[in-house]
Every structure is written in structure tokens, then in C-alpha cells.
Length: 207
Image (cartoon, rainbow, N blue to C red):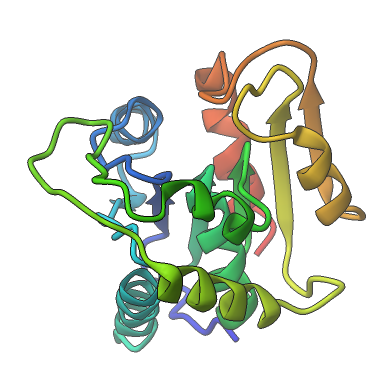
């Protein structure tokens, strides 16, 4: 359960997608927009490991650290693709609202395609990764930890033209939650800048 000092500054945590980074376009757009339009909101965009066990441990520790801070204000989550899954995981664990952008619903289904491959971040960082069967097992376990129905508050932003993930999976999974599903577009979510202000309103004006 989220607890916070009402005098603390709001915190927006942006979680990037699989093999992406905090340097991704949407992450940097949100960071820059907040700096200009809502400089009182603290922005955090951690680097997320593609290894599920490491990602889960680091993200939970990050949230616990913020929530235990004496001056912690309200926290909202924004996540794209794989980051959408992590937002849902953290949202359920810590009762946090989240905005999900073309989210991965059950990541363990697409992970087998990457087993044994040498993986490089799309954003050009020098790291290299290889996923194994244990990573799929870990992700499947994490997926089963999510309740049905979901207990926190979510806003799904999806585009039917997503060439990577089927928007219908997210539409079904987040049934009963706020949803905006647009025709066209792609996995990057075209026109994301239109939603910066509504995202802030959803995350922080209803708490």
C-alpha cells in the first residue's frame, strides 16, 4: 500500500521496454516535458535488466527505497512494452497507479525466441545479454503472482497498428480499466506527446 507525506514532491517513474534504455524517445520526451511544464514532479527512469530476476529485485528495491523516504510524495508509474509489465507488477505490489503504453502482457510467451542469442540493447549501449531457460521460468513465476482481477488503477494506451505486440491481449487483460485504443500507429506509439498532460492528471490528480 502506498503511503506518503502529502508535502512530498510527486514522483513519476518511467520504465522502458525490453532491450531499450532511459535514453529511449518516449522516456526523454516525458523527462523534457516535465522539466518545462511540471518541474515540481521528480522524474526517475532506471536502467532495467533484461534478466527478469535482476529486474524484479532492482525495481522492488527502488520502490521500497522511495516509499521508506521521509519526504516521499505520491508515486505514479509509466511503462512502455516490457516496462508496462513491470509497471503492472509494481502497481499490484505497492498499490500504485500506472499508465501502460503498448504493454507486454505475458512476456514469457515471446522470450523463447531470444534464448541463446547474443542480445544487444537497441539504444546502442555496449552491454551484451544471453537469456536462458531459467529466465523464462522466472518470468512465468512473476506472471502468476499478478492477481485476477487486478487491484490497482491503470490506464492502457495502445495502438492497433502495433507490429510487435497484439493490442487485443492488453485490451483483454486490462478489461475494466481505463483504456484508450487508437487505430493505426505502431509499437513505438505514434503521437505520444499528446498524452503527457493527461498522464500526469491520471497519475497524480486522483490520489
